[in-house]
Image 1 (cartoon, rainbow, N blue to C red):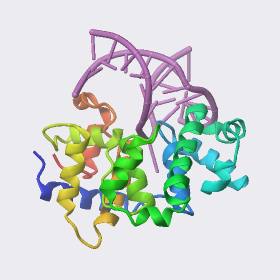
Image 2: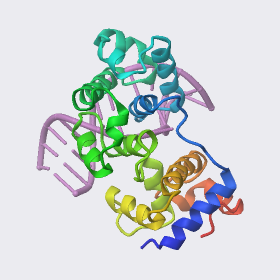
Image 3: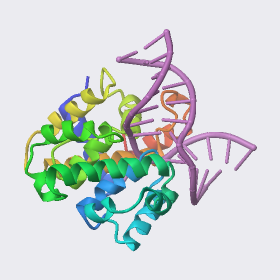
Image 4: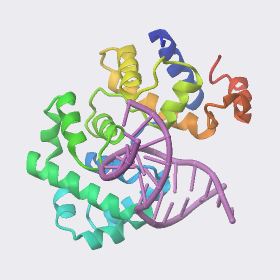
Length: 224
DNA sequence: ACCCAGGTGGCCC
DNA sequence: GGGCCACATGGG
């Protein structure tokens, strides 16, 4: 079972090794949300192309996006892949924020994270990871994102007993407590785990045969 | 010519 | 609850 001290130590090591990540790269909160949907199971570079297209067409705001046809939107976000489902998902989200919050993110922010998480999870196309990405990076709510890299990472270093989403999420949130910089730290930790995962830990659970394991230890990112 | 990428929902059992 | 599948583009 994961100890609080262990996760904090790992966080500090990752931070020292990779430096601050300063996620999420975006000009507005709405852009973060759109990016969170577009990057689902997709390389960020591809999602970025779609975001640039949206920006060029002034579609990075709830109402302009709402007023765009399905066909146009599909064409504009095509580079992000899964463009038909993602078009629906973007539409589902804007319908929600316009209906419930008059299209204003600032009004969403007034609500508590548990309440918002439930609402977000009711939207078709927004699952746990996307919901938590929106909560953490767009709305700056205290939540931890568990994505594929995080599952691999925790499994690799045997940091939890059970490997389910909520278990890992709660464990990490508890480890960071409730301080001024907790949200900041949760943002950094997730970004660092992704950055680390892009280089290491790919062959989970057969990590003994993973050629990167040795290098990972050698570089002192993680001590086992 | 493969394999992967900052997931999700639907279906089956 | 878990196991499989479709969804799709672009880069290595």
